[in-house]
Image (cartoon, rainbow, N blue to C red; front, side, top):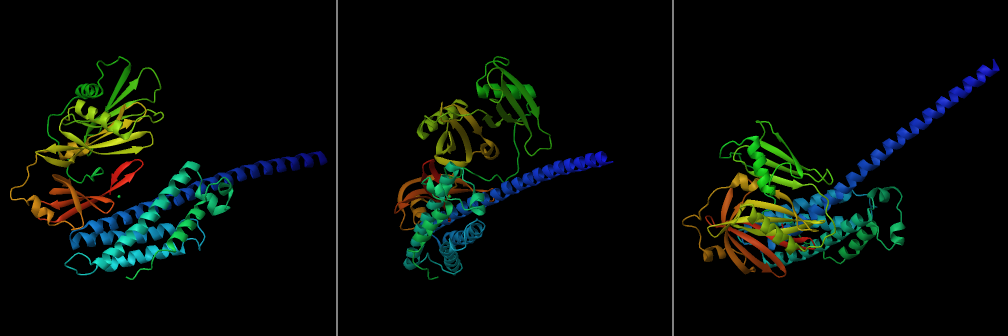
Length: 454
């Protein structure tokens, strides 16, 4: 009896021990999942904060370049909205309550000031007093944005998770001569203490496609799609070093295409090339070569030259580069078509260049495919001198040309494009050639990864 009871007890304890181990493992797994989820929330809040501050800084810069009260109000409204969004994102970060009181106060007053200015019924552009206040706000916003960008790079290089700040306030990073995020924000606090009290982001390289898709031309076969892919990639014959596979999308798809996959017979199987070819017309929508890139040895100018040569080789002779941006060991070059001495920005092409060898590893032509058509400068359009009169008098104009720009609603506008400076800031201002309306203002932002426009 005792032996039986002893064996039973041991069995029960063994089962309990196994169950406890399993339960502990399950709890630990759930804990890790929650940590990953929370870390993702923190990172999202930080990147949203950085994005909002970049928009605030860019909008205030555009206010300074605006030539009409209508455009001024639109940018002041944008700055007001994103100042309050930045406050929301700031509050979600795992920082102690007393760290960012001054920063929150600054964002709140900035938003209030922009709101008051944007809701007036002024028929003229803002007064010099308000303009000087906007200049101060812009400088302060620029400083705050630069500090956040430096923090983003710092945390990215060190792979330092926000969750560690939220849980145990480690100081190991400080010992290693690195600053904890709280300490970086503390430095911002010190800087913001000196701010006076208030009294009450290549152009069009990210077009939003918002139009009906209607392609012209005959419907191509699978064999023709394969041939188009070979010509695009300069493959002389199928089966020589490569295997090609093709599938087709549903006819009910928004843009019916053939997807061609080119697989190397030798080397890593992951080094594939994938292309989408439209069923109607046989246009190459995009191409991507999935290969790793080595150490960067080429400059952005080298990348632009390689992209220009590629664009010319695939048949686009009348295109000019409008921007180049580095992303890790790759660069993306944007192009717009020159048509009758106009820069047609809706005719957008992009090429991705590997900065180790200069190989073209990506291409995108969807915007050009969907907006391709001939355009003619409208009769009776504003003269260059008449359009210049619509500009802010503080803008020192350096370059003028005709342009067609895409609008957010999917339409387009014929504009005079003026490139100029206000102080150290460079802008592109677009005056509607028919109505004289100030259609858009883009600010040049010079970064280590290229010149961006916002």
